[in-house]
Picture 1 (cartoon, rainbow, N blue to C red):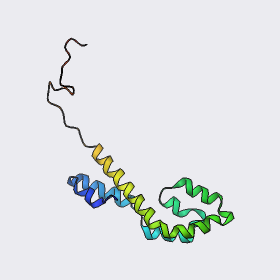
Picture 2: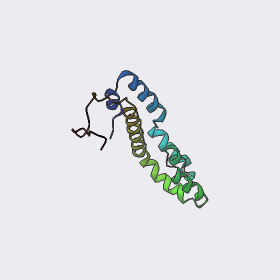
Picture 3: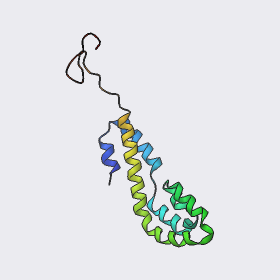
Picture 4: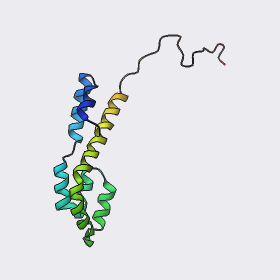
Length: 122
């Protein structure tokens, strides 16, 4: 499990502020997920909540059978774990995007990656 606060400690102040801002918007509440699964699970609202759109559409298409409602009652107890996984994935995604946006260090003049220089263009 990724700890967002541990990730934030590895960033400079500007990056940390950006990370915490984006993660605050992306973070989902386990309690909200469980409540949505319990009361609105028959139409797949809990799946839409954590970005599982395909599963939400499947629940929505079959809601008239009441099967999704029965499954959602069970999923209400699984939602805190699923929401935690979603939050971890989002935190890791945001962290990696911030790290990737850092400027790369320039190599000193004359340095090459292979250790040899090509003379004459070939």
